Image (tube, rainbow, N blue to C red; front, side, top):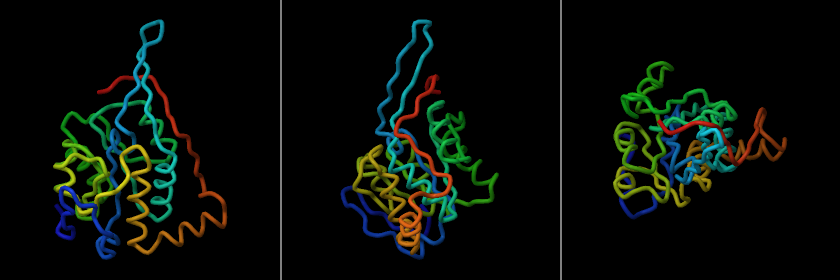
Length: 213
């Protein structure tokens, strides 16, 4: 785990993110299933046997990603599963750093994003929920967990939220991070003045054809 972060522990909900640590972050990495979604997968087949997949995304998280981008932070989606629905959601939110089902695992996936775009582990935050996120949380500068993360993930996290994955957990983390950076009030004020962020679009459900990788 990054040297600037201390662990919140198994059962405790963490306090505020230290401002000095928050201001070092340049990239926010997000797990997908269990963080951007509630972990549920709706899978069905059409008459011709084509598999269709639905994932539910929360509108609050879409706004959170827009606010992070407005603050100059990069956002990445990192998942062990391939999903056309996730790719569609990323495109909708202008998230260009996306790695799905990398056969080398999540560490290699995020390492590739970091190296290709000039980021480093210490200036990266990762929001996770399950065992597959542990290797990332051990490396990033700001390890974070959603409220219903497994105990092993909560034990590694410097920040633990109160909102479960798929129900606005990314929004909660974004507000905590941007608040610690001293940017939340400014961004919220700009939104109140204009009614929307430039280029922002949102839907709560993205659907696509495909199967898990």
